[in-house]
Image 1 (cartoon, rainbow, N blue to C red):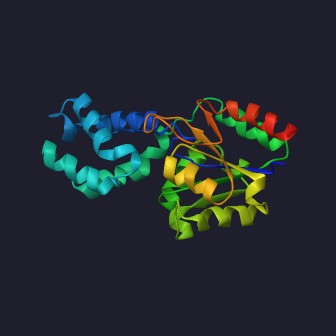
Image 2 (image 1 turned 180 degrees about the vertical axis):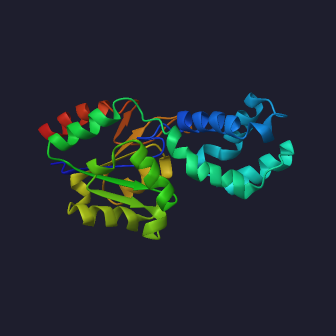
Image 3 (image 1 turned 90 degrees about the horizontal axis):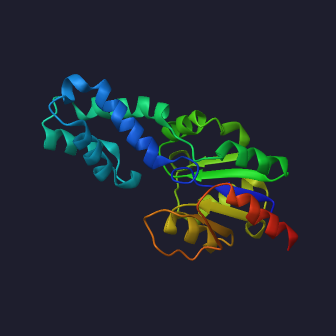
Length: 221
Protein backbone atom coordinates (compact mmCIF):
# COMPACT_ATOMS: atom_id res chain seq x y z
CA UNK A 1 0.00 0.00 0.00
CA UNK A 2 1.41 3.35 -1.03
CA UNK A 3 1.72 5.72 1.93
CA UNK A 4 3.83 8.55 0.52
CA UNK A 5 4.73 10.35 -2.70
CA UNK A 6 8.03 12.22 -2.89
CA UNK A 7 8.75 14.73 -5.65
CA UNK A 8 11.66 16.44 -7.34
CA UNK A 9 11.17 20.19 -7.90
CA UNK A 10 12.80 21.55 -11.07
CA UNK A 11 11.37 20.02 -14.22
CA UNK A 12 8.81 18.05 -12.20
CA UNK A 13 6.66 20.54 -10.27
CA UNK A 14 8.30 23.73 -11.49
CA UNK A 15 8.23 24.21 -15.25
CA UNK A 16 11.85 25.28 -15.28
CA UNK A 17 12.15 25.82 -19.03
CA UNK A 18 9.26 28.29 -19.04
CA UNK A 19 10.43 29.87 -15.79
CA UNK A 20 13.96 30.44 -17.07
CA UNK A 21 12.77 31.96 -20.33
CA UNK A 22 10.38 34.27 -18.47
CA UNK A 23 13.12 35.30 -16.06
CA UNK A 24 15.76 36.00 -18.73
CA UNK A 25 13.36 38.06 -20.82
CA UNK A 26 12.46 40.13 -17.76
CA UNK A 27 16.09 40.44 -16.72
CA UNK A 28 16.96 41.84 -20.11
CA UNK A 29 14.34 44.55 -19.63
CA UNK A 30 15.52 45.34 -16.08
CA UNK A 31 19.15 45.62 -17.17
CA UNK A 32 18.44 47.11 -20.57
CA UNK A 33 20.66 50.19 -20.10
CA UNK A 34 23.60 47.76 -20.00
CA UNK A 35 22.26 45.22 -22.48
CA UNK A 36 20.71 47.33 -25.24
CA UNK A 37 23.67 46.63 -27.56
CA UNK A 38 22.60 42.96 -27.58
CA UNK A 39 19.53 41.68 -29.38
CA UNK A 40 17.10 40.42 -26.76
CA UNK A 41 16.59 37.08 -28.50
CA UNK A 42 20.37 36.56 -28.63
CA UNK A 43 20.75 37.26 -24.91
CA UNK A 44 17.90 34.88 -24.02
CA UNK A 45 19.12 32.13 -26.32
CA UNK A 46 22.71 32.26 -25.07
CA UNK A 47 21.69 32.30 -21.40
CA UNK A 48 19.56 29.19 -21.90
CA UNK A 49 22.42 27.42 -23.71
CA UNK A 50 24.95 28.24 -20.99
CA UNK A 51 22.51 27.39 -18.19
CA UNK A 52 22.45 23.77 -19.41
CA UNK A 53 19.06 22.94 -17.85
CA UNK A 54 20.22 24.37 -14.52
CA UNK A 55 23.33 22.24 -14.19
CA UNK A 56 25.74 25.17 -14.66
CA UNK A 57 25.75 27.59 -11.76
CA UNK A 58 24.97 31.13 -12.71
CA UNK A 59 28.22 32.81 -11.68
CA UNK A 60 29.89 30.97 -14.56
CA UNK A 61 26.96 31.67 -16.88
CA UNK A 62 27.15 35.41 -16.23
CA UNK A 63 30.92 35.51 -16.49
CA UNK A 64 30.66 33.93 -19.93
CA UNK A 65 27.85 36.28 -21.01
CA UNK A 66 29.86 39.30 -19.90
CA UNK A 67 32.88 38.15 -21.89
CA UNK A 68 30.96 37.22 -25.04
CA UNK A 69 28.73 40.29 -25.16
CA UNK A 70 31.06 42.87 -23.55
CA UNK A 71 28.54 43.66 -20.83
CA UNK A 72 29.53 46.46 -18.47
CA UNK A 73 28.18 44.81 -15.35
CA UNK A 74 29.89 42.57 -12.80
CA UNK A 75 29.06 38.87 -12.53
CA UNK A 76 28.17 39.55 -8.89
CA UNK A 77 25.56 42.17 -9.83
CA UNK A 78 23.97 39.94 -12.46
CA UNK A 79 23.98 36.94 -10.13
CA UNK A 80 22.36 38.99 -7.38
CA UNK A 81 19.59 39.95 -9.81
CA UNK A 82 19.07 36.26 -10.55
CA UNK A 83 18.95 35.29 -6.87
CA UNK A 84 16.51 38.06 -5.97
CA UNK A 85 14.25 38.01 -9.00
CA UNK A 86 13.96 34.43 -10.25
CA UNK A 87 11.23 33.59 -7.74
CA UNK A 88 8.97 36.12 -9.46
CA UNK A 89 9.19 34.13 -12.71
CA UNK A 90 8.30 30.67 -11.39
CA UNK A 91 5.84 28.82 -13.64
CA UNK A 92 4.10 25.70 -12.28
CA UNK A 93 3.25 22.74 -14.44
CA UNK A 94 -0.46 22.54 -15.15
CA UNK A 95 -2.66 21.02 -12.42
CA UNK A 96 0.12 21.27 -9.81
CA UNK A 97 -2.01 22.63 -6.98
CA UNK A 98 -4.96 20.37 -7.75
CA UNK A 99 -2.78 17.26 -7.90
CA UNK A 100 -0.97 17.91 -4.60
CA UNK A 101 -4.11 18.79 -2.66
CA UNK A 102 -5.91 15.77 -4.07
CA UNK A 103 -3.13 13.47 -2.88
CA UNK A 104 -3.31 15.02 0.59
CA UNK A 105 -7.07 14.47 0.69
CA UNK A 106 -6.39 10.78 0.12
CA UNK A 107 -4.28 10.71 3.27
CA UNK A 108 -0.95 10.37 1.49
CA UNK A 109 2.20 11.90 2.96
CA UNK A 110 4.05 14.25 0.63
CA UNK A 111 7.77 14.89 0.46
CA UNK A 112 10.20 16.78 -1.76
CA UNK A 113 13.89 16.25 -2.44
CA UNK A 114 15.60 18.88 -4.55
CA UNK A 115 19.21 19.64 -5.33
CA UNK A 116 20.21 23.28 -5.13
CA UNK A 117 20.87 26.22 -2.85
CA UNK A 118 18.65 26.30 0.21
CA UNK A 119 17.06 29.75 0.30
CA UNK A 120 16.88 30.00 -3.48
CA UNK A 121 14.96 26.74 -3.80
CA UNK A 122 12.74 27.53 -0.83
CA UNK A 123 11.86 30.89 -2.38
CA UNK A 124 10.82 29.10 -5.57
CA UNK A 125 8.75 26.55 -3.64
CA UNK A 126 6.99 29.39 -1.83
CA UNK A 127 6.46 31.22 -5.12
CA UNK A 128 4.54 28.18 -6.37
CA UNK A 129 2.39 28.30 -3.22
CA UNK A 130 3.05 24.68 -2.29
CA UNK A 131 5.31 24.77 0.78
CA UNK A 132 2.54 24.03 3.29
CA UNK A 133 1.28 20.99 1.37
CA UNK A 134 4.48 19.05 2.02
CA UNK A 135 5.25 17.11 5.18
CA UNK A 136 8.98 17.07 4.42
CA UNK A 137 11.17 19.21 2.14
CA UNK A 138 14.86 18.37 1.78
CA UNK A 139 17.14 20.79 -0.10
CA UNK A 140 20.62 19.50 -0.81
CA UNK A 141 22.60 22.52 0.43
CA UNK A 142 20.92 22.43 3.82
CA UNK A 143 21.11 18.64 4.05
CA UNK A 144 24.82 18.54 3.16
CA UNK A 145 24.14 15.81 0.64
CA UNK A 146 22.49 15.66 -2.76
CA UNK A 147 20.81 13.31 -5.20
CA UNK A 148 21.63 10.72 -6.43
CA UNK A 149 23.16 9.77 -3.05
CA UNK A 150 20.93 7.19 -1.39
CA UNK A 151 21.28 8.90 1.99
CA UNK A 152 19.08 11.85 1.07
CA UNK A 153 16.31 9.49 -0.06
CA UNK A 154 16.65 7.44 3.13
CA UNK A 155 16.52 10.64 5.16
CA UNK A 156 13.25 11.69 3.52
CA UNK A 157 11.71 8.27 4.10
CA UNK A 158 12.79 8.33 7.74
CA UNK A 159 11.28 11.77 8.31
CA UNK A 160 8.03 10.65 6.68
CA UNK A 161 8.09 7.43 8.74
CA UNK A 162 7.47 5.22 5.72
CA UNK A 163 9.44 2.43 4.08
CA UNK A 164 10.80 2.58 0.56
CA UNK A 165 8.33 -0.02 -0.74
CA UNK A 166 5.46 2.12 0.55
CA UNK A 167 6.61 5.14 -1.41
CA UNK A 168 6.70 6.56 -4.93
CA UNK A 169 9.25 9.05 -6.23
CA UNK A 170 8.39 11.39 -9.10
CA UNK A 171 11.15 13.16 -11.03
CA UNK A 172 12.44 14.15 -14.46
CA UNK A 173 16.12 13.19 -14.22
CA UNK A 174 17.23 9.71 -15.24
CA UNK A 175 20.10 9.36 -12.76
CA UNK A 176 19.27 11.77 -9.93
CA UNK A 177 15.61 10.80 -9.73
CA UNK A 178 14.55 7.57 -11.42
CA UNK A 179 17.60 5.35 -10.99
CA UNK A 180 18.47 6.76 -7.57
CA UNK A 181 14.95 6.18 -6.22
CA UNK A 182 14.81 2.65 -7.57
CA UNK A 183 18.15 1.82 -5.97
CA UNK A 184 16.74 2.53 -2.51
CA UNK A 185 13.67 0.39 -3.25
CA UNK A 186 11.14 3.05 -4.18
CA UNK A 187 8.80 2.90 -7.14
CA UNK A 188 9.82 5.56 -9.66
CA UNK A 189 7.72 7.71 -11.98
CA UNK A 190 9.58 9.57 -14.71
CA UNK A 191 8.12 12.89 -15.87
CA UNK A 192 9.08 12.78 -19.51
CA UNK A 193 11.33 15.44 -21.03
CA UNK A 194 13.59 15.85 -24.05
CA UNK A 195 16.85 14.96 -22.28
CA UNK A 196 16.35 11.19 -22.63
CA UNK A 197 14.55 9.11 -25.20
CA UNK A 198 14.16 5.97 -23.11
CA UNK A 199 13.99 5.65 -19.32
CA UNK A 200 13.29 2.43 -17.45
CA UNK A 201 10.87 3.74 -14.85
CA UNK A 202 7.94 1.96 -13.27
CA UNK A 203 5.65 4.52 -14.87
CA UNK A 204 6.11 7.38 -17.33
CA UNK A 205 3.94 10.50 -17.35
CA UNK A 206 3.66 13.63 -19.44
CA UNK A 207 1.35 15.52 -17.07
CA UNK A 208 1.04 15.65 -13.29
CA UNK A 209 -2.63 14.76 -13.40
CA UNK A 210 -1.65 11.24 -14.55
CA UNK A 211 -0.26 10.47 -11.09
CA UNK A 212 -3.80 10.19 -9.80
CA UNK A 213 -4.63 7.38 -12.22
CA UNK A 214 -1.43 5.51 -11.36
CA UNK A 215 -2.25 5.64 -7.66
CA UNK A 216 -5.78 4.36 -8.29
CA UNK A 217 -4.32 1.28 -9.98
CA UNK A 218 -1.70 0.74 -7.28
CA UNK A 219 -4.16 1.06 -4.41
CA UNK A 220 -6.27 -1.73 -5.92
CA UNK A 221 -3.36 -4.18 -6.06
